[in-house]
Length: 166
View 1 (cartoon, rainbow, N blue to C red):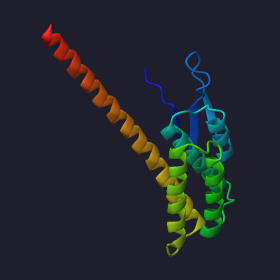
View 2: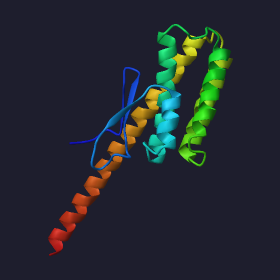
View 3: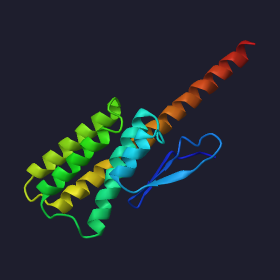
View 4: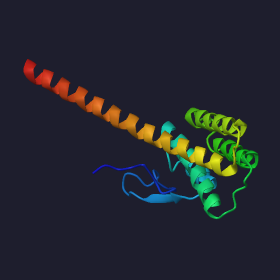
């Protein structure tokens, strides 16, 4: 059985509450940047890449909810300011987390570049943010699977080599 520390689908985010491990596997919903901030601050999510991903996806969930509720400004500048303020807020959950700060800077750049583009709207900015946030998760999963595959190959090669020498 393999555990997913972060579950994200259909603009819904759940994380394993790492405070409960190893005795209980409990997923907690993250519905907003504020939920993401608390999960990071309370160490319910751990590990540099996971912290950054939860922060970015927590804001993606909030943006999606605002969009679905029809409360999204049509102006990319207003939406961009909202996103940047939330990114800065999320960084305060763990000010020393390098990956979190790097991700916030990257997404702030994405926001600023999108605002500068012609015909940028609040809707198109949220779409760009969601796309990049989801790609961040996909790349992290791929990296982890590759690390596991290379590690397993290395172990099997070493075990085989030791078996031949005995």
